[in-house]
Each structure stands twice: as structure tokens, then as C-alpha cells.
Amino acid sequence: MKVKKCKSCNTELKKDWIALHRKLLDKDAKEFLCISCLADTFGCEVEDLEIKIEEFKEEGCVLFK
Amino acid sequence: MKQFIYADNAATTKLDNEAFEAMTPYLLNEYGNASQPYSFAREPKKALAEARQIIAEAINALPEEIYFTSGGTESDNWAIKGSAFLDTYKRATITSAIEHHAVLRACEAIERLGYPVVYINPDSKGLITPDALDSTITDNTRLVSVMYSNNEIGTIEPVKELAQIAHGHGALFHTDAVQAIGHINIDVKALGVDMLSASAHKFNGPKGIGFLYIKKGISIASFSDGGSQESGLRAGTENIAAIVGMAIALRNNLAKLSDNETHILKLEQLLLSELSGFDFVRNGAENHVPGNISLSFKDRDGEAILHRLDLAGICVSTGSACDSVNTRISHVLKAIGLDDSYAKGTIRISLGKDNTEDDVKAIATALKRILLP
Image (cartoon, rainbow over all chains, first blue to last red; front, side, top):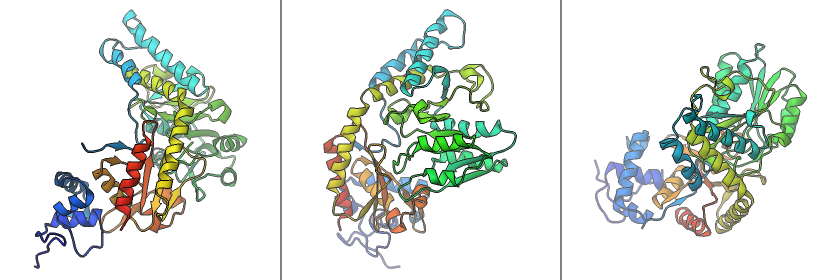
């Protein structure tokens, strides 16, 4: 399987980061940001996004399955 | 330090400081059971009577017309079920399609027991028009229940006119005033309502307490059976601290109601002017609860906006929730016929008396950052 990389910094992407990008930025995106670049975009801390990811999983959001 | 802006006052409000101070003696020292005959119960009994008096005066009711409950949901359930269960003829209930779920689910529950319920659709502003009720009501209608103001879009309903129509057909009229009490002057006698629901935490009181106004002479089935509290209709030891806190919070909110309204309406205008240029619809009627601002942005995702604002330290609500498969649009937005392309991008900003111009400017700045390409 082809490894997906952050469209901004080329960091190898994790599944949850792709889901988060879809959840908060663009559901139909084909290219994605890593969690650090997402945090920069949103003006928040990476930890804030990690908490969000866990909350979305607990809520059963299908993007994170 | 990260900013924190609370703009979800329709969901709940911050506890009034004076209400908190007034509550503490009944949590710590004056913990006597108000139903007991000994002297230690005198203070809580007196506090209970004073709180009932304050609340009654606030809505132009009699103290014996105020029944303390655990909140808006209980009050709504009691009004709907209590009036149905006392009627052996199983006559119909009429409500609106945009009620809070506390009313809608209670209506569904009585439907399952064989009591007919009719749901009136609003117009595009969320108004339940007198004509719509007039063409639906029959002499077989037992109860009409229409909210005073809508929690999602803020529309204030023509309650007085609706109550007159209900009474003209021999029906009772209940209004869920949870979003209105403490923010709008309410006079139950002038409105002509038979029952009215309220919840303290919506007007800077504590959570877990509310009341149901039941007009003198109106009979409904008891909510709970047991002791003689609340005239035997709502048995259970009274939560004196919460009741006292509710009364103080309501009294304080009403004392500054006009100033608060002016302040909040100014903030509303500021927010809307800051957002001019974006493609959005403001939902609801011109006559609305101050501060309730439902905005639907075209081709946007309301849930994503909510979370992005949260990451910026701003609390608001949304009118839709989505996963990768479906977007669930709220029953209110569906009922007013809002186009899906807007409905999916709905957020509710509910400003309160403690919000400032700086708060609104920060919300607008954060929204622009989210909405601009």
C-alpha cells in the first residue's frame, strides 16, 4: 500500500490524522496534513488534536474506524 | 494563555454568584427536611416559601401555582403526560414539530399509550401561526403545547393568541418557556397559559431544578406519588439549596433584564456586521430571544465549525452532526424547510449577559479564519 505523506511537510501520515483532516477540514480531501501542520492551521496545540481524536473515536465517528 | 469564550448560553449559563452564596447555608448547616415539624426545619421551610413567592411574583402567578421540579424536561413531561393521564377519554394533544425533545418524546410516549397527538409545522421563520392551530384544533383537543421560544433558532411564538384559540375549544394550553424565562418578561396571567415549564440553569441558576406553573383550578395527574410535597403532586424531599438558588438567579436576571437585552442585542448586531460578506442565512424570526443567533453557512459543515471554534477556545452549538456517510440535520431546521446546503453548515451562537464586544470580535475573527478559503 502506498504510504501517504503530509502535503505540507512530507511527514508520513497516520490513519487518525487523515480522519481528522477529513473531519475538521475537508471531508472529500485527497491530500492531507499531518497533526503538527493541522495544529498550525488551526492555531492550537497538537495535544488538543490528540484529545479530539480520542473523543471522536469514543463518539463512534466512522471516519476513525 | 489560551482564550476562553462561552457563547452557548442557550445550552446552560454560569451560576449567579449571589445565588451560589444563598445556596451554601442549605447545603452545609441548614440541612433540615422542610417537611419535618421540629424547629430545625423552620429555616428551610421558610426559605422554600420565600423562594416560591419570589418565583411566583416573577411571572405574576400565585405561590401555590408554582411546583418545583428537577428541571425543564421533568416539567414538560409532567405537563404532557399529567394532562393526558387524567383524561379517560384519551382526547388529543396538539404540539409543534419544533418543540424540544422533552416535549416531543413525551408526546411520543403518550401516543404509544393510545393518546392521539398532532404535530403542527412552523413557517420558514419557525412561527406556529394562530391560523395553523385554528385549522388543526377540534373540540376533542385536550391540550395544546407550544414552546414560548425555540431553543435552536430563538423564535418567540405568539403564545397569547395560541392560548386563546386553545381555550376557545375547551383545551388547556402549556408552554415550554425554558429558553425565555429570565431573558424576557413573562406574565402568565396576561398570556393566559395554563401551564408553563422553566429550568433554572438557563437563567444563571443551578442545574437540576426547575418549576412547572400550573394555573389554580387546573387538574393534572401527579408526577410522583409519595409524600405531601408540592401539594402531593410531586412527591419527594425538596432540594432547598437549588430552589433558593433558582429564586435568587431569576430575581437578579429580571432586575437587569432591560439592560441585558440592550447589551446583548448590540452584540448580536456587531457579530452580524462582522460576518457580512459571507454566504449565510440567519434562522428564526425578527421577534426572538436576545442572543440566540442561528447561522447557516452555505456548503459548510456545522460540526466542523463547532470543533474548529472549540480548538480556538470558543464554545457554540451546531444544528447538524455528521459522519462520513450521513449528516443529521436537526428536526427544527428540517421543519422550517431550510435548504440542506445551508442546514448542514448551521451553528448556534447564544450570547449572554456576560459576553463582551471583545468576545464577539474574537468569535468573528475565528469564524472568518475557518470560513475563508
